[in-house]
Image (cartoon, rainbow, N blue to C red; front, top):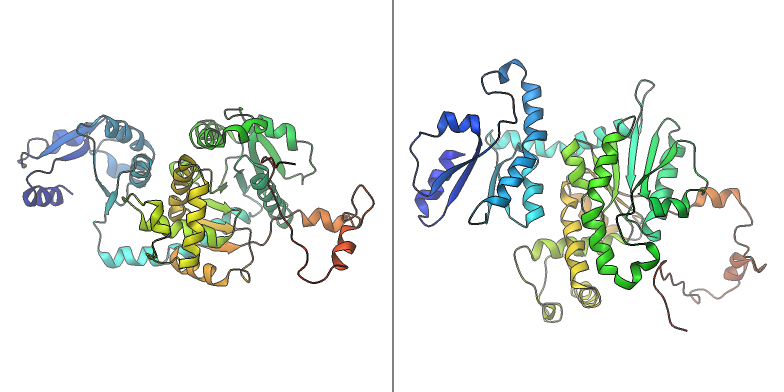
Length: 417
């Protein structure tokens, strides 16, 4: 790394490079000659000493992964002038998330051979799939424990709960902790659920559900900024410890928490896979660019998005608050470093999109089908009959083909009379 920095400094005299090391390592290499545009900065000695690391390398490696991230981020916020780019060793798992949180591009340096990196990368999907299955399918000596974290909205909580019920029904030994705010517990706490699903709550740190429509951008920002700390605190208190996390994609911090705690994270997307694919491709195209709304109408192409889809995406951007759109795209940016991606869709509905996503992401991508409570529907043959005595299924069957339009307005928007 230091030799790479010297090469960069020699090629560009007006670049400033801050090499971040522990205080111990500054004692080792501080006196060594270096160009004037390279400087050292230190974080505390939060690791076992270099002199004793050979005695317990696994503990040393674990300390690098779990104890260096926080002091590095504090230093990053204090450095003047502000950092424009990060070059991080690929074995520092917290470096890329630190950059993402500050909108700083990160280059990863792999010091072993490229062939070894290629081998690890190509085998990642198989290893992660086996890793996840080990956690979801427990044996007699291990308690598999899934922490489920939905976005706090009816259209997100319902699919997440139905997915958890499916998992719980497939494996009675699996424990699922469904994490919601105290307010949401008052809404759904009495709903029937399997014995191996339990509720756990975080405080009401976001605006009340009945007020969210009056300032949805404020509500959305609160979800992104105020729920992470109480969720992580609760996660550290769960007994038995969580062995996997299922998080809504629009819970921006879900993957980051999993990375910090070395817990695999599966992300759930409750909208069409095509929409996520469009947002993902726009994210890639727009990195470090300011894209004007006019680009959606100019006929310019964005790789992976058709012209008709691009026009639809333009409508989404026009109708969505800019703050919400920015935060939503930040949520999408975490998808590539998750361990699994779940969609409430059918493969047959969006085959090209699923083929594309499965080819692009180095982890399992699963369409799980509509996450509706069909287990309850199967137990109640009269569920199609409303309070007014009308059998809606019978009525639907009597209508001409393609003559009925179903519109879902969500749970918090209002319509005029």
